[in-house]
Image (cartoon, rainbow, N blue to C red; front, side, top):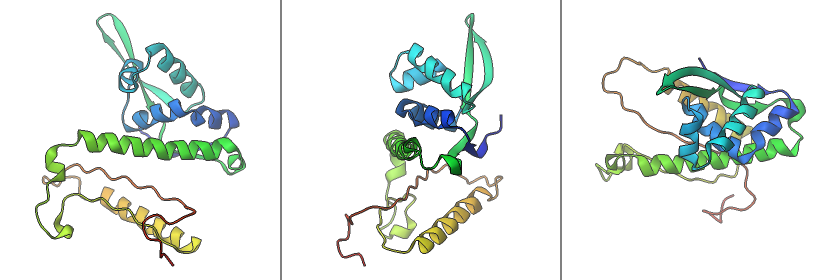
Length: 198
């Protein structure tokens, strides 16, 4: 199955389905690759019955899809995957509290998944091969800016274009390595890092 980049959540029932914190956590895994209920139960340290209930709810609301069946040891393994890499509520759903909570929960799950990626990355990922930060093969940055909505939107447009240009790069390059990039951005009330932000 080919995943869409973005799926628009059209109904309130779909919005409720993805607003559940456990389902959001499950979706993080199902966006990455297909999983069985058993695999998710193991990853999330939950009973398979609980996971299967939530898988059925997500499938019923067309958030995930059965992508493969495999027979192993007399059992039929069902692999599910998210229908898209991202989910956005339709405009008529944006005023619902669930929409805000689903977005907040998805940010938290992205951060949690990033933590797992850091903890499981090989030691070489954190080697510093130079005193020049621009030569490092890793990056960790947190910044706070005070700017207009228009400038922020322009920045996000340019950033998305930059990521798209990386993805469109030559796939036949034999020297390629796999890198993990995680980005979130949102409005905050108080500066944390630089109290003198203008």
